[in-house]
Amino acid sequence: MRDVVVDTNILVSALIVPGSKPDQIVEMALTSQLNLCYSDEILAEYELVLFRPKFNFNQETVKLWLNCLTESGRKVSPTQSVFEFQDESDRKFYDVAKTCNAYLITGNIKHYPTEPFILLPAQFLQLFM
Image (cartoon, rainbow, N blue to C red):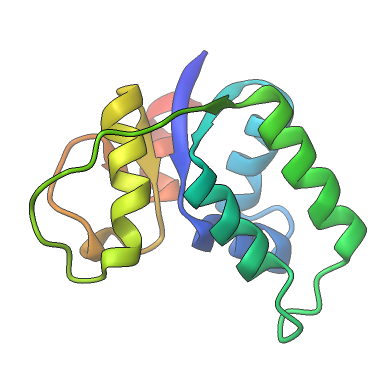
């Protein structure tokens, strides 16, 4: 099973567009085809963003997703990287991916350093489906 780290924008996209590439990736994680790696900091961001009133996501669905992802996923305490990020809030995803030797799947690839393990949803699915 492949280890992955999923940027919050993937979860948001999956909830907004059922059947989309982000939704396919989340479904793979929910059905244990992928092993989601996360930290307390990532989980806190997932909760903060997915429960925002502006999205109006079904709260029961979000709770179910988060419970499934955390119960079947791998919680880690990452080693912090030392280089600068354009957006420091992205560091937590990068650091967990580096610590777990996992793929980082994001819709904002330009926010991260150029690394072969950082992929857009379409790139990830093309490689592993």
